[in-house]
Figure (cartoon, helix red, strand yellow):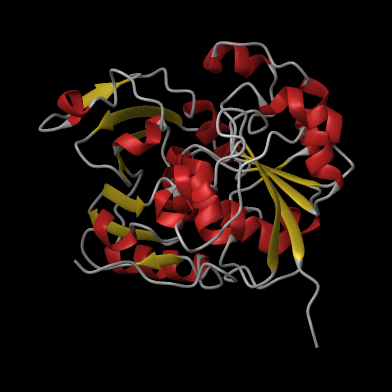
Length: 343
């Protein structure tokens, strides 16, 4: 007996996020690709742009209008730059399910876009129509959602590390979040920030106290009834993939490491893609996977929580597929069940 497949389209499939979506979707047992659009590469085979897909698919990019792609699809993935999805979404909402990988529908407060992204939101009334897509923390809403806004990569790593503490009201008034990311987080278009001589053998901080993902972290922590002051600093490091986040603070009272580890294990007992590990997490063990590895350290009042994710998978395309699975009543692991590499 054949199973009816989900017809999926990727709007803007030429970047790194689109590439990762396609890597998963072409092998997903319950998905049939309808359209993959790109104005720049229309007519070219997907594998001519994403060479890792050679022999995985013979599909080509098209310049199909988003409305036409939506009408032929059960779900569309927006893999477009920030600021584009908000204009495209209005014309297709209600025609199909939408999963947006950009930042255009993550923040509930429209004024935050001007303050943190540098542009005014074109369709603020649509913000309330999108569920926040951090799968492990918002599963029930995602299952019922017509539209999902996938989280930023930094908030994914930070919030997964912070959520158990926030849920137990163990966060103090001030929390330090230190995140280090590889060059792929800047996208596929070359720039001074991603130029190899600028990244190799180099570590630097950027957007200090001004990163657009900070209000997203604060917004989601507030849903647990806590509003710590967050000191969020991001760093670029000479790797391609991965985000390593260290969160540290002084607790209001001494805590025990084993009790915290048990608390984390209990919080994520039904979350397959979160692994509580001994010792430090390592980016190499989550590279290319949808796993988030978390470890907890404690000494008296001193607490450090660390997380490692692949920014393009758990921080973007993999989480988007995980959300799609929930939206269509599938096991959330479908099409994502594989380990990382060693070494």
